[in-house]
Amino acid sequence: MLHALKRAWYRRRLKDPAFAYLCEDYDGDELVSIDCETTGLDVKRDQILSVGAIKVKGDAILTSQRLDFLVKPKQPVSEKTILIHHIRPIDLEHALPVEEAMQRVLAFIGPRPLIGYYLQFDVGMLNKYVRPLTGIPLPNRQIEVSRLYYDWRATQVPPGGNIDLKFETIRQRLDLPRRAAHDAFNDALLTAMMYLRLKGGWKPKPQD
Image (cartoon, rainbow, N blue to C red; front, side, top):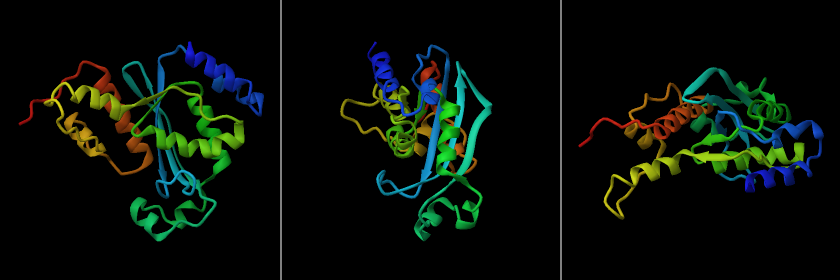
């Protein structure tokens, strides 16, 4: 009920009715796992360099329904950023302008719930560009895999025990394959796998 009221509130504040589909009630079984590569961790100052997303339907990852593209930053990329993401200025010459990139993201996700790893940051980065375009932040329901993992792992460790929430630790604990590459799409794909592992009754192999 609360989420429906929130969607109705956002619908009234849309700048363009063409984006009304974002605020539709959604009762389907598709979700979108999404990840952004950025120039840093400051939502106000930093920029999006790439977006990766993939749809999940029921217990299946829809590998044919995906987003994987670079975003052209409005400010030059620092050498430090290049070393972290291995995305060079030459790689960004033909990247999508940020407004077109956001149009593609919105059309892809629609009103579907979003899955992510520390999703609040990615949504915050997207909202920096989505708000000027639509007049509202993303209204989608958000599912945080690190929270799902914490709740699952908390049943296995002694009270007060440490629960490591690093992405690589979660991957290993859930016995998932290594990332093919450290980029937005592969992170979104692995995050979708994490979600399905944690959502189902899957049990990891015994560990010492």
